[in-house]
Length: 190
Image 1 (cartoon, rainbow, N blue to C red):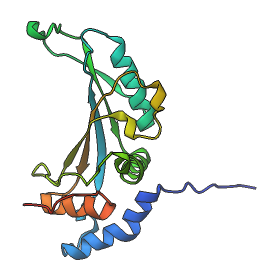
Image 2 (cartoon, rainbow, N blue to C red; image 1 turned 60 degrees about the vertical axis):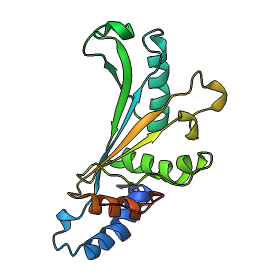
Image 3 (cartoon, one colour; image 1 turned 135 degrees about the horizontal axis):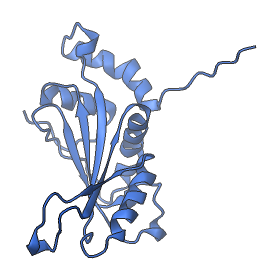
């Protein structure tokens, strides 16, 4: 007897498939399903302050990023030496992770429903996209994520989160992110 287990899609991906896709198709009068904007990947980047003086900070930041994202980040090294910053070539200074498919949908769902509302005096995020339908968001500290134990944080560290979409214009990218639940504070300006 064969038993097949059906893998359940992440909650936000289900919402995209059932509601957002159809709404975008109708809003922009798109006839081809493949032309409807969708989320491709989410890139998290953390430039570690104090990495030049203390190399262990990069490992700590990478561990926290792995806890947040559910995926081991890559360590980014400096490309050239800058004597004014006491930086040598090939020193570890940052970490980054690229999320796709299920991990991406689960992370975006946690970010929008749990992490962003935990920011003190949160009134929404800026609505400025990059001109090609992609959106970058800066987070000032990693403690907004519930996966991070507040008592074990050695230093506060911010990160950049970039949402890469197939949208060709800012208007379509904004509509996609807005329908997914991105809490934009101000009205989008083209």
